[in-house]
Image (cartoon, rainbow, N blue to C red; front, side, top):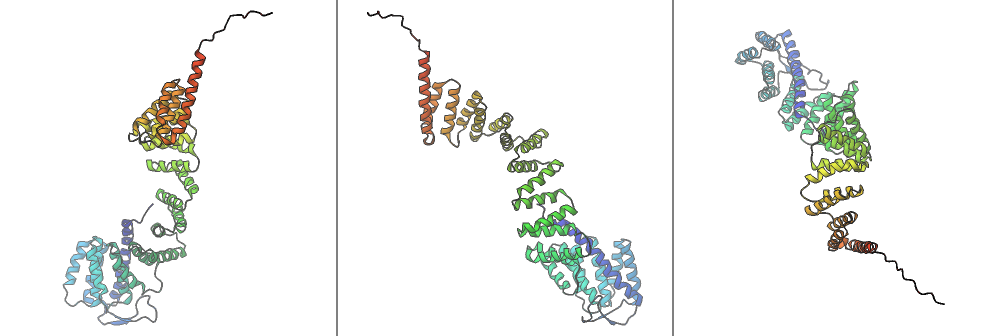
Length: 457
């Protein structure tokens, strides 16, 4: 079953955070460049509700406008070294106001993030959140969200959740991505009951826009249900993954859910369809589908799958594989074909004589008495049988069929030592002795008397 891939989540968060950062930088900076005044002003935070607190917002002063323009242009041109040099020069200014400091730290954080220096990015972004006056409430809140994202990239999920929740409280209608960020953080903290409603809400908001839920989001929801062992709820989510993002691993996940729900009919149909379409190639996968076919009373299909697996070399020539293959052939009533894999399994099994005993029974069913005798003797030699006495009775029976009654009697007498088989052995002894006596009688010369008694008058 597929789990949540932390690397893929990290890439997704990075893909989201960079555009957000550029928005936060460009929009307020543009406003500051347009005014380019020294005075402070009181404005309402962007997208804030009417009743929210207002904050005094400063503007970029004229003497620094050109510097910020050059820094922004260098970043647009991906000239990070040039941007860093300009920022060092700007940072040496002793009298930067709060909005200028905010942009200074934000630009630095952007460069650090582009260079995958998350510690540096976090330090710079946190510096912006520590500035209380001079920047808009909307800008300040946006930085809380960016800090949460960087913490998430660092896998510091507990602190990421703290910042995300602080940001969340400032929003009247948080985005689907915001719900997902919080849901992911809860999931990584193994707080699945808290993760679930956030992930559900994020997906629901996305669907309301008429969009297909993102693959990673459905995958996360599926994983939460799996961790909570709520497989009935997990099933429709995995079906969505199969429908919208058809991949083999999601088909396997669907099979996993069917298995957990004891729906082997659906699981078998799914795996057979995957096999017929060439999606199942490994030994374990072929073993699974053949086992399912056996459980669904389709041993012929199970045997044919294993036969193809041996021919292609996918199945290793192991004791387990040979034994499983022979069992499928027996169940399919392919008795002759079953002998070879069972014989191979018996050769590989050196720890006991159980498989040799099974092989012997197969030979007996096919009236192959000499082969059966050899297999039974090997079984008794290896030992550790389920019922040694019964194996001896089988050997005695075979020897009797081979017209060796004395050997059969000797074997049946040995079987008398075993309590479970003693009565049966006793009956066979009587039967063999009777047959031997009958044979002796048949061999005796029949004498016909030619004497004629005198006729009496």
